[in-house]
Amino acid sequence: MLRTRATPNGPLAVWFPAAVARRPPRPIPAELLTVADRHKKSSPYTADRGIPGAFEGETVTRRRFMGATTHTLGAVAAGAFALPALGFALGPVFERTKMPWQSVGPLTDFTEDTYVTRTIQIVSGIGEAGKSTVYVRKRNPEIDTEPGGASAAIVISTRCNHLGCPVRFTEAAGKFICPCHGGVYDFRGIREGGPPVRPLDRFYTRVDNGQVMVGPRYSVNSELRRFSPRDPGEPLDGIGQYLYPSRFSTPEKPGR
Amino acid sequence: MPRLKLPLPPVPPSVKPQPSRPGSGNGRLKPHEHAAEAGITVVDWIDERTSLSGGLRWMMFRKVPKGTNWFYTLGSAAMFAFLSQAVTGIFLAMYYDPSPTRAYESIRYVTNEAFLGEFVRGMHKWGSSVMVILVFLHMGRTFFFGAYKYPRELNWVIGVVLLIMTMTMSFTGYLLPFDQRSYWATIVGVNINGTGPLIGPYLSDFLRAGPEFGATTLSRFYAIHMMLVPGLIAALIGAHLYLVAKLGTTAPPWLKAKPDERLTEDEV
Image 1 (cartoon, chains in turn cyan, red):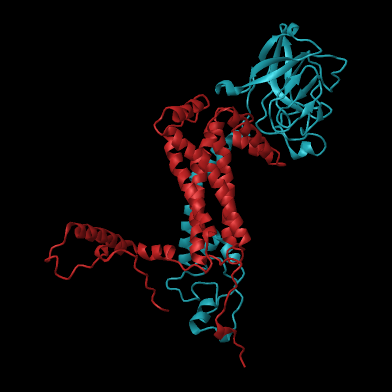
Image 2: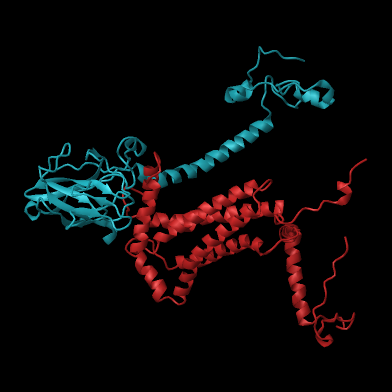
């Protein structure tokens, strides 16, 4: 009995259209087939292949259907625990952090021609490891000509932009020097020598009742243009700003 | 093939083990014979139900090529270094507290006060370097003996993954003492990760659990160091050993293969 293409869709074809749409197997030369083989491969319909209890128009055998169901259920069960666990582990990558304003003392403590060290809290809840040193000075309009700069104080991060060691301001040279691999930055924090890839990072500042307040960190390129905070070792000039994109975890700009 | 007869060790005849004469035990087993019987019974009971002995024989009693030498033990040495790390690590975990405020103190307690603590921690600390060295020597042996060639390429690939896992263990374990050196080494290491283009910044955020070294960075490193990676290493060592047993080892490159003369003879 031969069925035509006129009735190709059995009930299973609705659930597994791919199984029906599959191309029929390449015909095997008749002399290579035994009688049983010829019977088996001759038709996509189970009824034609002599499978007992076959439905009209059925193309997926019950063995195949059972196997596919079992594999699907197994994948659902594995996904039910694997996906939440993976999301849990990846969550912090997509979480925006907050950084409150912190006071580092009155503006009168600072001068235009040298830096003063202050300690601020970068991360709370981990004791001393959450603190970081920053360098603070008053803004000097003669040298601080960076774009968009209007704040009264300049706060420079001590994190070297080679690999993150803490830099030290050397008063006699008027430069920041990194002890690890010899990175050198000038008075404004712009790279002068060594392996760092961009100027020292800065912090948002504002003056509140005469107190200098420090906010979140931001990164700058070699023209001191502002970018969202990047990690050390990530250049921001030219193609660098696209190779090292802004992260989802960038702290929100705090309100006043 | 001739049956192999091992030479007897040179001991005086009076201490040579003599088989007891049949019936000399007067039908009764001596205590040590009872003990031996019990052992055999237990092993038989298990083997009858699992057929483990076949697999063990397949794994342990393999034919090895001529010229096998001490360099072939470097893989086992690396594995035993891993086992030593696993055992000492489990016991160190009994004392270790992965919180930023308590980690250094718990390590100080292990080193200075716990009985044998300095010794076990020293084994773990120095053993990690030993493991890295042995892994590289094993890799060098495989490379210079040409043992990575067909059909053993997959075993080389697994070995490279194991090398990367070992490096991951070194990186994550280095932070755990939480002193100045480990803190700054981790900052630098995470920043090196971050210099990878496009995904580097997000990879750093994943490692630190945030944009800065934070409250959960240490416990994250600890979980990776003692659960995630050791499990993967153990599983991959299993696959590595299975392939070694299945494919066999290679002869050293200085030995020329001597084919059967009947096969080399020209057919006329």
